[in-house]
Image 1 (cartoon, rainbow, N blue to C red):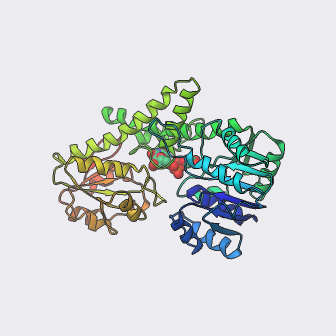
Image 2 (image 1 turned 90 degrees about the vertical axis):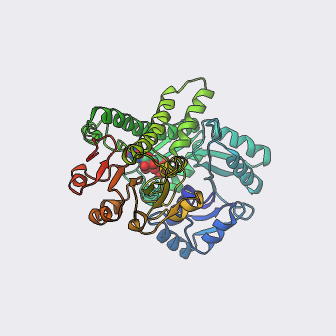
Image 3 (image 1 turned 30 degrees about the vertical axis):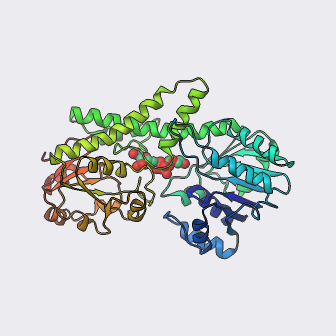
Length: 435
Ligand code: UDX
């Protein structure tokens, strides 16, 4: 099929490349000329394992092309995907301006009936709004589909080519038939295909993300209790996770969740519930506990180094999670800001996200070499659980730091190893060592 994808960010680009890989003719459209120029040179504009190879393959095959405007990309398309950003407004509601613009662009340039698939995470009833916008712009018929993405950054290509499940919401049988045909090369016994109505699909996506965020906040609340009780939150998570009804994933206490999805999606879910007349207080607590995880890490640094003024604090890990260079809503950057406001000298190191961190926070000095970053440091804070940090030469690190102090915001290390290595070690939700 001929497919046009509006938005070539983490979701849109991976979706475009996946659809091209499975045999469709795809044009990716983005209003950012710099991004399109990079893509036309065959360069992935962000780090994602496997993405550059996938792009090389489908661009060489000629099944994925890029355009700055919908003008020449939409005409003749069978399916149009809306993969634009839906950032949060101050009141938590999703900002749907880009979605409305995409809907208008598709309608304006459509040369016949077209299936319109919204993949961006949007509040319930957005599809109806999109349909109304398009009907006001064009005489053609637009078949609306909600097809939320479940890609995790750091494994987006894998999640896209081998999805656990595909969720498709539509109120018309023909729209369901077309989208199922579109995805048919991906379907096998390992993929759960959920076909439902538009509103259910829109809400299900928010439910999934909010539940995962709630699970993380439950672990972080446990961490606060364990710190007070001197118990071990990692062991508790292991014990809980051995119950198949709970599951171990997403029970890692740490600096809290960040990224472009969870923070905005939890706020947007709470806002739309309120708009529908339900006070989703549970999500208010999820957000509060998440903020508290960052506070706890800040207080640990203060507890470990005493006065912060003039102290060199090194953040190991700047990306919001390992496997990506994405620093949007990264706990590390919020922690850096808090520490700088308290007078500390904050520097950082990340295996992938040094450049993106500097773009977002020009004041942070970043180092490609972790030992250079830690030279003379009064404290190292582990903010992202990159596997590189587990392999650090602790003897070398101890020798170059002013004081051998590590605050482990992601429980990367084993406390007994840190005790043997002679560090003052403050993990998350576990008893401190040599404090
Ligand atoms: C998430 C959802 O997992 C994915 O299904 C959805 O499509 C998009 O949003 P993503 O934001 O890429 O994916 O990353 P994820 O792996 O979910 O982590 C989100 C945040 O939670 C990260 O900051 C991570 O560090 C944090 N996290 C995750 C924890 O703090 N503890 C955990 O146990 C798991």
